[in-house]
Image (cartoon, rainbow, N blue to C red):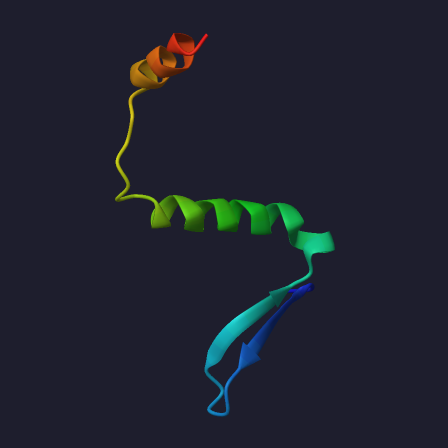
Length: 59
């Protein structure tokens, strides 16, 4: 695939990837957003109603 280059170790195992952001910037953003969401899965959540109450309560 043009604009994507794998970095391999001495055994030929893929260890990293270089992505041409001019060519694949949107795909990278989607990938990064997915990674961040996965990292935050175990964080406590607030309902939309709780957020609205907190935000509107500050006015």
